[in-house]
Length: 183
Image 1: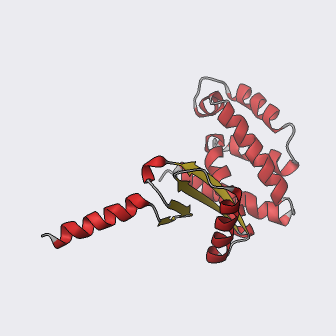
Image 2 (image 1 turned 45 degrees about the horizontal axis):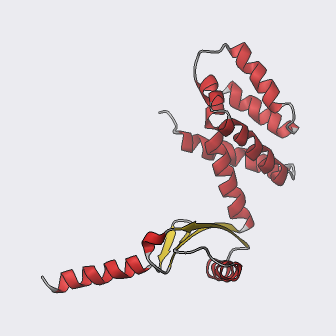
């Protein structure tokens, strides 16, 4: 059975994370992985090159040598392993899974807040404080989205949980309740 890119990402990132912990280089490994992933995202032809047969293995090897030239020994070995196993096309999934593991281990939570207007710095600080207390995390990375269609209030997404305090949500709840009572 063939593994999905998501499954590959989980497995390889877990192994890389464990070795990075043993070598006390988790932060450095994270930065190098992000940097390498950025190179791939800015150059979509790399994924195509490593996925297809248009370029010889020797040419691909030269590209890999260039990619890993400025990396630590751990990351050089990791990139070589990915190349040898034809998994370089899974770098984005590996990076995402590594970041997820890092955030989990360090109590960092990604939070998205949607509001009608941009939040003031005071409102951001208050929201971060509430999320830290409610979800027992050390750090909150806040992504703000301005969306006038919610009419008022805010929608907060923390991981897979959504706290919807928008006026549209309340309106739809009332509408649904009225429809049920009129049947």
